[in-house]
Image (cartoon, rainbow, N blue to C red; front, side, top):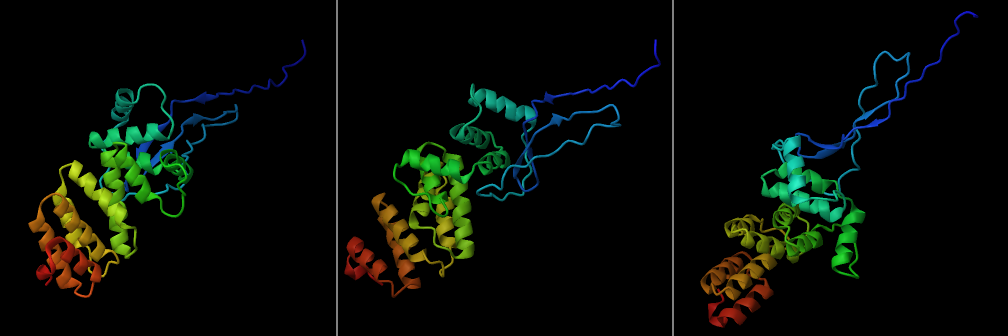
Amino acid sequence: MKGKAFAAAAVMVVASLVGLYYHVTETGTTKVVMKQEKQISPATSAPPAEKEVSPAQPVYQFSTAAPSSAGMGDVSALISRYLPGKQDGFETRLKLSEALYENNYAPDARGIFNSLNDADICGFITSKTPGARCEGDMRAKLGELLYADGYLKLAKDLLTALVSESTARMTNVGIDAFKTLRSAYRSSGEMAKYESLIESIPESYPLKPEILMDAANFYAEEGNKEKAKSILTAALDKFPQNTALHAFMESRFGVESVQ
């Protein structure tokens, strides 16, 4: 028998671990981490370090200083409880996000939402409103559709972030965002938050007179004319030259009520 020859041995370990889990950073952004064992050759002294793969930049970031309180087991239990069967798809992620909100895991819920991309959001919007155009910031329209579909907590959090950003930057997001947010607050029994919101909006904000007039109209329609009148009177004190406010006051309460 001839001398020993070098034996070439290759050990290939292709193991795809269940490895898809949610890791929430201090800012509340969820990252998707894939664990995979790499190929290991006999000469390799140690397996390569795990590679962390982050998803594409989230479409809309929610800010939160609170760390995640949902452990891996908790999230898995919620998936099994609320989302049996197929675990992918846009609306599946919306359902899981809402379930996380319902169980007080807001950072995790925001992370799920942040994993959605513009194409998915556009597809959701056009499926609900055929012919709609997906242009610019789609949060106001998305919030409206989420609220209509029963995603109350997700819609409220999304629109609260949108409105807060808008008032901070003095950008006009449209009155519909405020109307939908008011409906969401009303459905969750938090109208005090809505009232606090409209009071805190700076007078220099582009939509301030329109927001106050819309609020007054809402309370008038609800039968609370005294509150509606007080809002309009305060609005006219701040914006005495606003003809729309004067016209609305006249149509609701008569010319003699204009201050």
